[in-house]
Image (cartoon, rainbow, N blue to C red; front, side, top):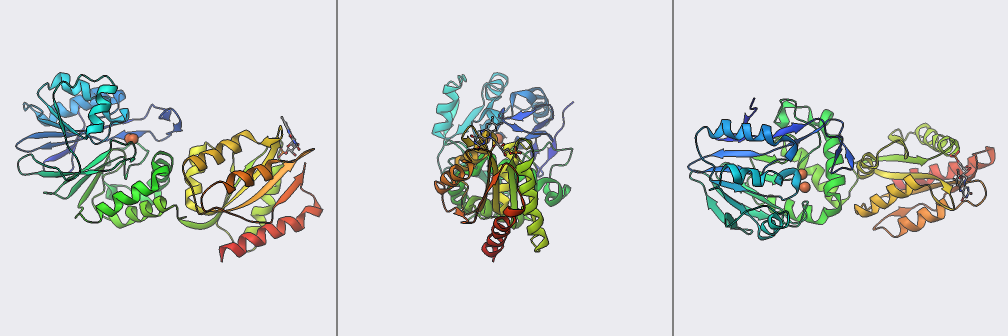
Length: 399
Ligand SMILES: Cc1cc2nc3c(=O)[nH]c(=O)nc-3n(C[C@H](O)[C@H](O)[C@H](O)COP(=O)(O)O)c2cc1C
Ligand SMILES: [Fe+2]
Ligand SMILES: [Fe+2]
């Protein structure tokens, strides 16, 4: 059965949801699934904006057939070539052999690389090029590295609709609801939107800033991303989040404590610090066990909070491996402008504090507080002063 929705009078959502996939990009858990959005415009010409992941191709084809009725497909605009959206390009070509593919030069190169038989169906476009489909005119805007180099976004100047590719997307399947005002975004979606942004696009903050700048010059009435809800009002809320995330500015003054522990002593030290902070009025504290929390959640929270405490055991003279993995991911995703405090633990040759400091020193605009603590196997009475001074330094640095 087809399942489509009107986005505007003549624009239809023809995407679908995957609620079975465990790991997006085979790496990020998606407990609430994911939507692959695709849009079909019915004008003098018929135009498909991006395709979907192979997993939902059958649903996608049913949707397109239902909306097209007996019309042929004239154009297919491909904004982004990652297979979660581009996997069905060849299937569309097989079913609608006369379709013209509209995409960037790099995207057409990628189509060949992926082995799609695109023949001479391609119309290459670049930033500023326009195309008319009848009533609707569109212009193309380059969006390199959001989140691949070939990416562009397409702006329908007639209706003010921005087809934003991966930008403004979110993890999470759409449960019949399509628009931002049909969900409680701040309550139910923002965490998954942040986790999507920070892990998928987080590294490319300056590119996102460049796109936001271009977007500020156009009259946006609707944002149609490739994942998650379509935005038709309250743009300020999401644009502000994107602006913060892409400038690596924290959303919240607060302390995220991430601990790596085998036997619980490092966790006990972390608990001690958390309790001290809260008793002094810093109630915005969250704690995560680095071994139990998938790193994509840690990354998302790291983009949210201003202060991060890393508490790690020493493991074969190194940082505890899951903690190292988290720090390396933070570095890979270009996180900046955070304040850190360090807790190390070891029984014979504690090293993790020094090693964590070295890694953080190598990252951009990170402040590492001087006061730190070496826990020898377990925290004891005599360690209380050091912990108190870490607590005080954190509070001072928040002012
Ligand atoms: C496989 C393994 C390797 C370890 N390597 C070191 C080490 O190189 N240096 C050290 O001081 N302690 C080392 N330790 C000891 C732990 O870091 C130490 O016992 C710590 O207090 C454990 O804290 P926890 O209770 O939070 O797990 C190692 C422990 C294990 C199990
Ligand atoms: Fe992508
Ligand atoms: Fe995507």
